[in-house]
Length: 446
Image 1 (tube, rainbow, N blue to C red):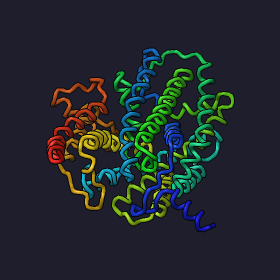
Image 2: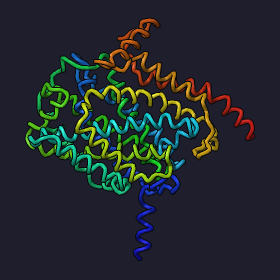
Image 3: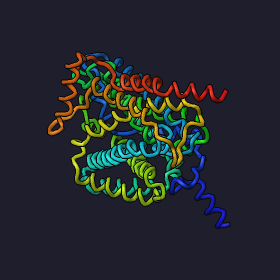
Image 4: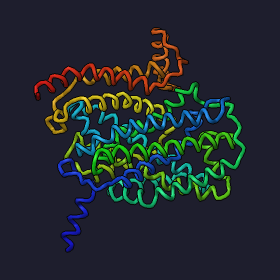
């Protein structure tokens, strides 16, 4: 009896190495719950100041948030769906796009991105808890790091708990904060970070797309591609819209931005309880980044146990959260995000254009160096549209791309969405690169 129970537990949890099969135990409720939880993040209302269109009616900003949330969620859902068919993690899925060894390039970048975001999330959790309870930050850093690491050891069990319980507590907390904020006067905001409607949309798109390199780590356990698409897009899209809009409304109601939004929400009646619920729910963001860092590393070292990797990653992220100025590191995280926006376009076009049997995710997956070209050109298009903004010692990056904009006659204030420009360029180039081979393969099978 105990042997049967043990075997069931193993089958119903994420595999420890790439050699083990991935269980397919997650349904629509689990998928929606997971991605809604991941979307309900304090990071979004804190970042809402960057999407506000100063001096314009709040409805225009809310519309920009809605457009960005829909576009970003659909893109995320489309990149999540293939894993439910191929049954492999995100970085292994890229073997079918670039080949095994070439997939190590995005794998390395994703490890840096996930580790950075895990550190950033731990800092956000600790800072919010410290402000809420008026206590030192460091104990909360350690507690958040330890809890997120423990969650990464049994990821599918955590997903089911999030879907059944945590998401409802988060929804209740967000709903209560909406009631309090909407009870205040909501004048137009006179200062905002968005230069145009489409630049505001661009910031919102960036959040869902930033999860593209992680999505397949979870949707490989979903029962079918349609469920993976609907659950991922609906869960994260709705949460993104709700949390960005909450931040915009709070900025209007209380006149505060950044982490001061948290202080303003704490000041409302029962705000402490609601914010503490959101702080607790925020741990799932750090958990997801820690787990995905470990699983991404397995694309290079497939025999390593993901649990050992997760413990190592959690320890490093916690240590960095205690010592690193993460705010100064934030632009580098956005730069890494800009790397993955065009890669998402390349993946989508190639996966749905190439013959299904041509998607090889084995250790012998052949290299496709030609598909590195649309990825690289898409990244260049992103930076030429809106260069990643750095200050201090790295300001030369922003200045160099600004000079290239001037050389090419590209207006720095065009108001275009860098994400949409990058996606379009990368997608069209991928069609040009992959279509001839797809047509030859189609003719050979007739």
